[in-house]
Amino acid sequence: MANNHVLVAFVPVNNNALVVFVPNTNNIVPNTNNIILNTNINNTNNNNRTLWTNQQLGFLINERRRLNFDFHYSGRSHVTLWSTIAININTIFGTSYTGVQCKTRFQNLVSQYHVNKKIYI
Image (tube, rainbow, N blue to C red):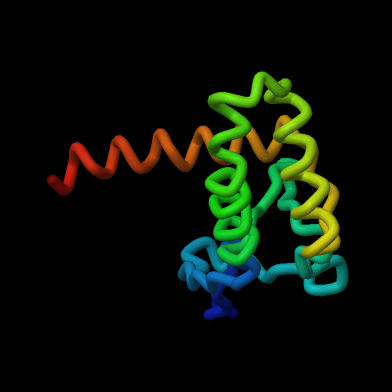
């Protein structure tokens, strides 16, 4: 007897779940006994990539802006400054980001800005 089940995929996006319905064209009955829902408690996905919330990104941008003078003119190590930003984010949000992760995420935001600026302007 043909079964009309559909497969449902849950994809974490900024702590929200995206639900995608895919028709089960092979008439395969899924085994629901072994389904594990990823509730994203650790703020990471299956690839161990860090998922940043909008609040965390806003805080990251504001902290980098606040320390802009120090980055350019104080002579302090950038490693120390990014570590300071990471400590502040971790204190506020209860996360465990490193200075390198904060630096990488900020640089990616700047790159994405420049790409979008070229596309839309």
